[in-house]
Every structure is written in C-alpha cells, then in structure tokens.
Length: 289
Image (tube, rainbow, N blue to C red; front, side):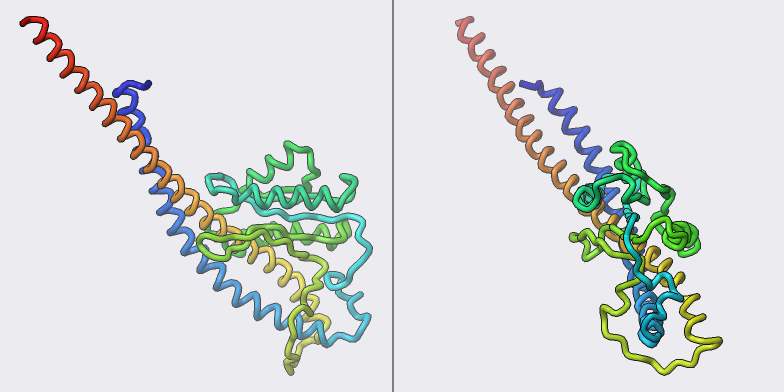
C-alpha cells in the first residue's frame, strides 16, 4: 500500500497535469472559434464559385469536356489519396479515424503499390505511412493553425499537377469534417476529375462571358479545385481543434476523478495512521498502570 507521502505527491502531480490540460482546452476552444469562422466564411465563397463553375459546365455541348481535362473521366490506372492529419496529437481519435479509414480503403481497392500513391499533411500521417512503407508522393508538415489561401495554394497546385500531368487518373480527398464541437466525421471526396458539379441542381444564369465560356471555365476550374483543397484544410483544422478541446476536457475530468480517488485514499491512510497512534498511546498507558 502506498504511503501517505507517495499519495500526496501523486495528488500534487495530478493537479499540475490538470492545470495543463485545462489550459490546453481553453486554447483549443479559442482556436476553434477562429477556425470555425474561417471555414464558414470560405464555405460561402466556395458555394458561389461552385455555382458559377457548374452553371458554365452545364451549358457546354455534350462531348466538349475533352477541352477541360478536369471534367473528363479517364480509365483509372493510378489513384492518389490526399490525407489530412495533424502535427501534434493530443486530439483523441482525430488522426486514427482518418488513417484507419485510408488504410482499409487502400487494402480493399488496390492489389499493388503501383496502383496508388499517398499525399499527406501533418507529421502524424507522414510517420504512419512511412512506417508502413506506403508510397508517399510528397507531404506538407508545416500547416499552421491559422491558414490563409496564399500558404495553401502552392501545395494545392502541386497536388493538382499530378492529375494534370496524368501521373494519376483520380484524386481523392480524405479528412475529418467538422460537424460541431463534439462531433467530426471522416469524409472521402473525389476531388478530380470534377464529377460532383452536377450533384445539385444548378439554375442556369444568364451571364455574359468575355472572352468566352470555354476560356473562363479553363481559368475557373483550377481555382475551384485549389479552393476545394483549401476549404478542406480549413474544415479539418476546425475539426482538429474541436477534437483537441474535447480530448483535453476529458483529460481534465479524468484528472479530477483521480484526484478525488487519491484524496479519499489519503484521508483513509491518515485516519488509519491516527487510529494506530491512538491505539499505541492507549496501549502504552495501560502498560504503565
């Protein structure tokens, strides 16, 4: 049985840990508010951009997709998976859910390493795939908590170039989608080719284009694809902060439970020690009579 001194030291160290987790919870909550705002603001822009792109694409004559490779499907010989993870951890099952899903998806769909490649953000995902000898095309491990488009666009262009250069025939985006502060879900979205533009009904707008629809669409499609990656990074970052806030709250609650349990053990040990001392004093007094 641990001594009173040992229990007291455990209580002190657990209280210190509880202060750290509580501080991390508050920091994550503040970052979550900013990340959620950024994701929501960009979502409004992305929806409008999608509406314009879909409106133009819906007006193209059938078979005209060949002019726009991002819209044209081709036989899939190789697939790329863009997987968004984090750098630091301490966010519960945030990374494990995405990585486990990707691992199962690859095992189910591919028989050979030559059939796929992985692009990953975050040190945790990079270490996971490298340790298991997955083919990693490239990675980005310097994603900041507050992302701006200029920081993400270079990476997005590098990702999209794999499809443009026909190094891959299909590009999937896998990440944690933010639902609310206590809930996230893994999203597997086909990014390229852009086959989701007709998923929702589009009201054909009567725009006047200069120079013409084809050239405007040629400029908008890369911007739209890059925006999808940027939007996913914002969404994943909000989900990350929410997961970290929840994990740190659970850690703080567990620390408080441990402190309560140790305090009870300490009080029992102290009571037993006092009882033992009283018994010894009474016994000594009885021996002197």
